[in-house]
Image 1 (cartoon, one colour):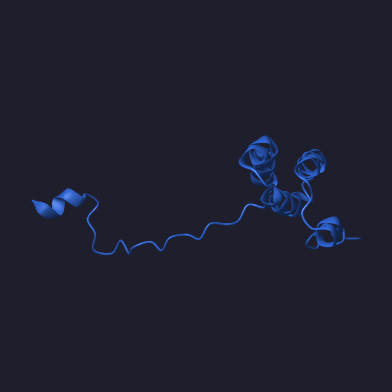
Image 2 (cartoon, helix red, strand yellow; image 1 turned 120 degrees about the vertical axis):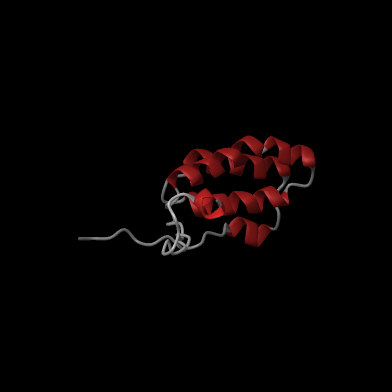
Length: 105
């Protein structure tokens, strides 16, 4: 069976060549990322959106991107691989009474 190719890290060539985009272009790109994100690309898309968010010059501009950033974070939580939680080591029950208060009587 053919396996889909693995997705490598994404860095926009525009951001490398041209430096930080203007605020309107960065907001438009964050919006575009939000609408085009898939389960397969959500990690890289969120990282790219964060880089764009960091490039925004004012707090007002960053506030405009909040709804898209929260949406991307929600998608990552929803679609993200469930990481198995490490089980806590259980204490040995040897020598314990079933009723903990019984030891104090």
